[in-house]
Image (cartoon, rainbow, N blue to C red; front, side, top):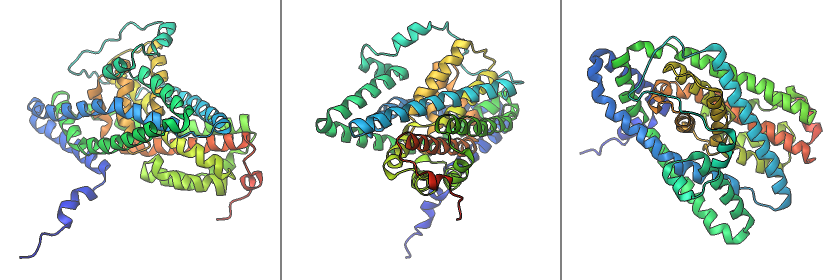
Length: 417
């Protein structure tokens, strides 16, 4: 008897995740349309998926952030470069999420629908700015981890990461532990995202069965708003910083990063684009190997401007979708949370969907609404990854210029290949 063909069990694995999720969404819409309210029987599948996403948030943010901080090794110069790099990344991320919020405010992609989920959404009374700053520092980091207080976890992780770097060799065993733990979390994230098609099917079947197909109509507008915000961020913020801070020709930057942008858009992975980004930084932009070899890997871990735009657009879209009026303090909280949470976003496909739940939870929006945009997440992911990579290369160029490690002849040369 001939052995079974090895290709059959691998057929499912060969299908890209985004196609599986899109299929799950389509089948969920169909099931909801055919079964109506009876499609609620599939809701527990979606609930399990949401719970799994929540399970990932704390350990993923904590481990990834520590690994990103401890990657900066070398006392003085690396400390200086590290501070400039992180400052630029945080500034551009704050701009990014603000542009995303502004675009959603202007174009209102979620208006026209009155959709509510199981739990009524009510905006809680916002604390004062001083109280927010005080609450950033955890009195007990174990409690912060147990309660899932993301802002406090981020502050503690940054402090621990810096401390591990400062103690040198004595911190190496702990650093290696967190590196292994982070890798394990990446794998667990991959496992959870493999369940996404089924989770999206369950949630969308429930939503479309109870609310009808109208809930899916604004999705094209959401994509358009997210892409417009992404293009504006690159053309206004990135090129503007290059001109103002670096006195550099922005057109050379844009032409020099094209290879990396194509790979980023097609792969939807900042980490996967890293080799091409290094090549573009060194050969096309003239950044030294030392600066590009440090700033780009750090950027692939902590620079998530595209994800920040996505969080701003989608958070406001969901608020409009469920009929919640966000206060100015809520907007500020989205900017602060999105900026800090983006540091802990792994540069892998689908991670932005997980980090979006942090922002939604921070302002009291329903996590179940993630299912509404999960089916188009791949399309959004391609745009936000391209922005992330463009931001990595912009910051690398500026840091190289400030350190005198940018070859201006290479930067200003006309590309011939």
